Length: 193
Image: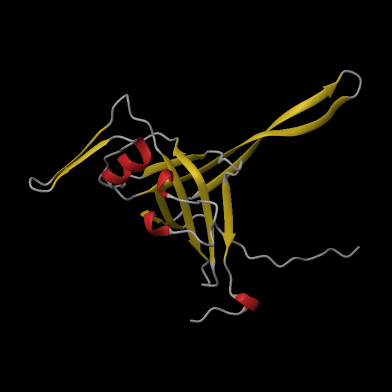
């Protein structure tokens, strides 16, 4: 028996750049070809550990005399998580917690107040991974994402604080959550050095 061999490009999702924007600032998030990325803010470089998890919630139809007849999809749970070592209170308040943020340039003070009334905003999330050999990128776009993690700050001189960013994907009007786009050199060419 001959097995079909398909050449594949191993991609380790782990390193890359994380970009966020408020979802209401993006005109048409599902149109990648004409996407205006001027509202995207680079939240930070991720050395390793970025993870996209897509789980499917299933329902079942069972019969008393035939057992399991079929399974069907009820919904999806799409999550993006990573650790970011960039400390930026303005970005945390704007994209993660929805908290009050103030900056006093005259006195050199930045302040973020976390309160019970905070609601995490709905964001557009883009993660861009550059292939190690320079032959292209892998891009993950979550059209509507909301921070769904816990903030934990450990002040340790030997281990820098890493802020765990975890976002849950929300369903769009078109019932979509996430898109993956892979770019490559047309014609299978070799990247220039």
